[in-house]
Length: 397
Image 1 (spheres, rainbow, N blue to C red):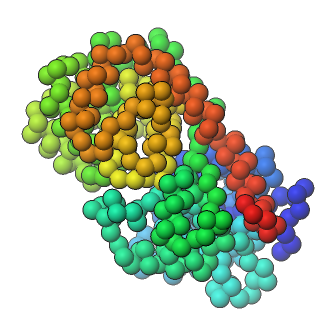
Image 2 (tube, rainbow, N blue to C red):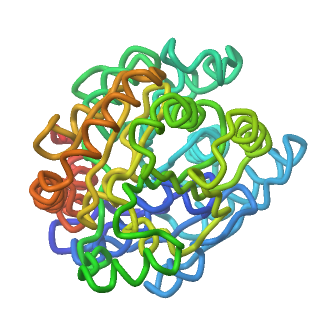
Image 3 (cartoon, rainbow, N blue to C red):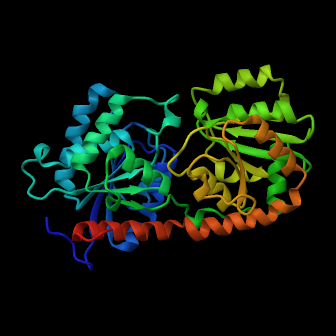
């Protein structure tokens, strides 16, 4: 396998944990949409049996291959399938995202598992989360996982892409990479997919959801698990909604914590101040019913995509000030911040913002402009393609 020159295509096999509707998966779709313009030929393999985004990827002309991992006992078979796929597609780059994809991709690309392959792909891994940081330990604390991740990273990875400066610092700390071996390329949004509604359309949507023009509406979306912090919003509402009775919270999503959240909703007597929408496929539409988008995570993330998308639609974000939210939001100019897990601070912030609604249109415009300028999918793909070429040519990325 000869290395490509500048006027030749780079072949990349992307290996990701699943094709569910998550932030890493959406980032992959954004990259695939524009990488072909940069001379990259793409293939995608996914490890776990969740394929919500498969049709969208295939519509881009990108071949998709399931690896069929349904349990730990199937790891050897999934690894064998990936080895065969590497031999068949002969990629210049094998690019992995998320733990099981990282583990399988890193092993499949190494010579001791592919002795008949004369030239093996260079391995790039994306650091999408920071789950080894101390604030994650109440929610995900697996020394064995860290050991496997670190071992395969140090022995198999040629370069790392971090989705934020915080993710870069974290992956250097926990994986042992050198700073020069990590390139920051932010998660992105595709501007063509994010066109804000007109005010008339937004009023119609609020009517569909049973909201009045006077209601001050927060919209939250995500997997319903404790680390996402939605319970903090419930407690803030219970304490402060008597001061602003028109505050409403709409929550979209599902997950193992849904039952606990609904029980807390009953115990706090929140009634119609909170509405559970369940899992939705039209989030980009319905979140525009909100005056603010709530991001209430209790622990650091790599670079959350949901706030980027809301802001790109002209909906300002009210976010817990975990890292790396400061890389996205400038307090009072492009969004609003509160102390993580602090229902008192969240409640006070909500009460203040509900009485200052006129100012939020200016923040909404600034938020959208900031996202489109700094997190554009086409520019992200251009940087990623440049990173691939630098790696293949032995130049600093």
